[in-house]
Length: 283
Image (tube, rainbow, N blue to C red; front, side, top):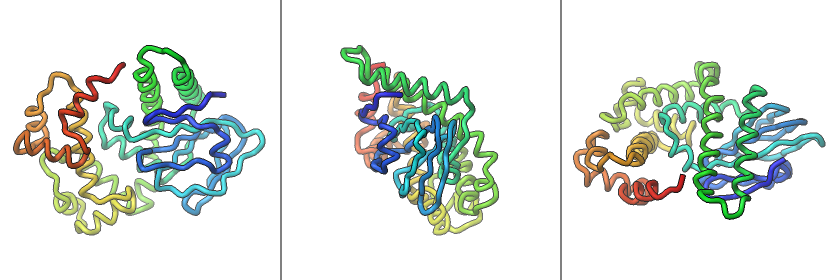
């Protein structure tokens, strides 16, 4: 169906590798997206059995334990592994990304409309063709554009499912608190960055909020607050005519220097270097 490829932050893997249990996700991988195009697939995730058939998508994360993968003889599809880079670079509110991630972590398997399946499949074929084309000008930019288009379609499937997910709305208290925390963060993160503030708004203790975050995301509440600030900093840094001082002011940092130290400590490079890397990217 497609020719597999691997680059820095997106990998298209042979379907057989997943069916034979050879797929392993690393810490830099944000999600594994599998689409079943025919036949039936059964697999175990974190001790629970899931089934997927034609026009169904499944999403797994790097902290999921995958085992006992079994496919029917007619089973076919594709596996795309997306790195954190692509979600960080998308021009979309991080609260929407987190909401989509939350429903993906509680549902795992999704029915996809046939038209959407065709669009996603066309993008995967395009990525495969771009990756194996020799001497293609702007190959990296073309591959990035196609993979990001795939991500936008993916989020367009997941976000409507947030409102319809019983687990998120009422079934599990951890997910309910997490969803409310994300909503509060999207509104208040520029002026409020303390765990105590959000815990108070939720009517729980800071310790319990961190328990909620570890249960739902595997990180602390403080790390999640930092994530949304860094996400917005990256978005602003990708804008060519916005200065470091303007970004520091917009994100409510006391100084440009403080913003620089905050960003470098969490990202590993200075904001000016990040901005330079993005400006040099070939589209």
